[in-house]
Length: 461
Image (cartoon, rainbow, N blue to C red; front, side, top):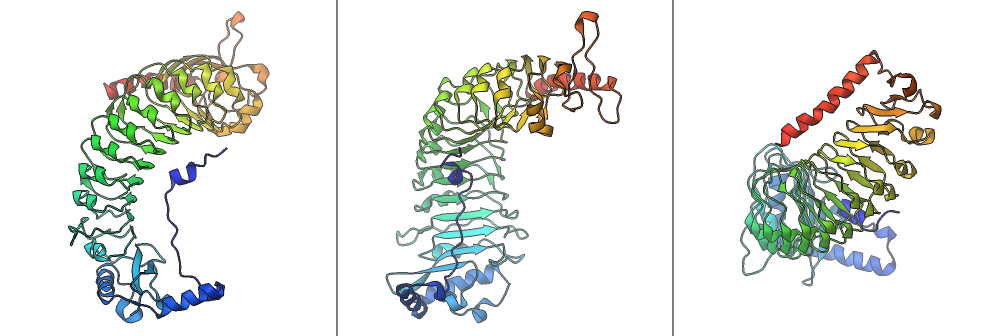
């Protein structure tokens, strides 16, 4: 069953509202529609809009082709206007960079004039600043009047450089801030933690450095935070547990060290947590079992070097559990068979031993299982139906002690292990052949894969 949180969690995308055709409106709406057509723009605001368009786009001669840009009959693509209490039309939304919205010319730079549009609520720049280097410039508020901007999205702008400006804290109405896939560097400004209205923060895929500010816990209305694919260091701040409404937490692909903070247990609405590809280690917090809404836990590539925690089996809503390449030892907990909603389990390239729990064969929703490159032993407990359902999404290779019972009738399936021999007569396990290579090389490949665990240890220590 899909969580009601998930659609909002994974994508906080706003749909562009296009002008409605007058033919589809009721009589009351038609009257309102006609009134809008008779309204004009504030002259200063219109001139500001022309300056922005001259800076950004050369798709057409905007002043000549659309002298009244807010009029529905001649409105610009990527532009939305709304009436104000002054009987004038005001710009409320601007989209740039991808068609049908205006595309950006090579000389386009960030237009700070957008903050002079007094009714602007949403701005999108996607794949826009790609040639001329530019920075985010936010002027100081004038006459103590702050910008009403609620959403600022700057995505895939490789020529957008410089710092995340501390002045961004002056945008007191900001709810969604997306600065993803740009070339921003430097530290995350502490001042950002004063934007109490913020519900979604995405600074992923930049070159940010330094530690995550402890003050970030002040953003108590956050529902999603993504700081992945940067070069952040230090520890995960304990204050992150103050974000009681958080549903998405992505800190993957940084250089964070230390352990998972105990305060994480307070994030009872958390659905998605990604901490992979860092330098995290130490035991999991005992209170993690309180995260009963957690559906995605992704923590590959960390130097954990500890037994797999059995209490993860109590997170019964888990759909994906990824703990690969992290030096886990001991057995696969039997409690993992309680994760009946699990669709993906990735435990490859660890130091796991013992037998595969029989209960894993009862995970009816699983479609991806990777237990390769461990030291597992014994007869594989899955039936032919399980093997055929997963197909190539099942990988058991690199476990020298694993074998298939010949009576299972699955000798022809290429799943990376051999058929169990008759140990009473001294025969050995006969590995299945790899296409194009003699079978004796399969054991050698397995051995080298296993020895790769030593390389993993050297990587982190």
